[in-house]
Image (cartoon, rainbow, N blue to C red):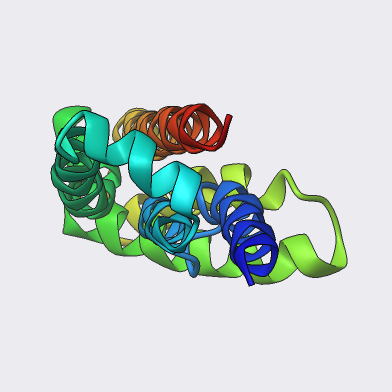
Length: 166
């Protein structure tokens, strides 16, 4: 039973890595779920208990904060670089189209989609090319910052996962 739990935890961590890029999958919460699963492993539970489960609590707080920030960073980036609501909506639509397109074409569609969506949204709203381009860059930077943040959290959780199992 303990081996099955460890394997399921590893699978959740693997899916979490994909979830750090794909917006439909909550990467950090899945990684934290993998960490919770290994509490069924006696050795891992004993290692976590040595630190009074403080790292489990810290990771829970970090996962909550990162999950909330992930929704706001692309919007913040678009607005910070001078974008309007049209750019924000375009960025969201571009992200959704990029995810769908990534299944049929290139994985880079996920990265390019929000940028193109923000630019097209701004241009459709009658904004200048300069404003549209800045909005697209802001959207991309927000998306990239969120992705990097999620990957870092997942790597930290993965490291702790390995530490408590060894």
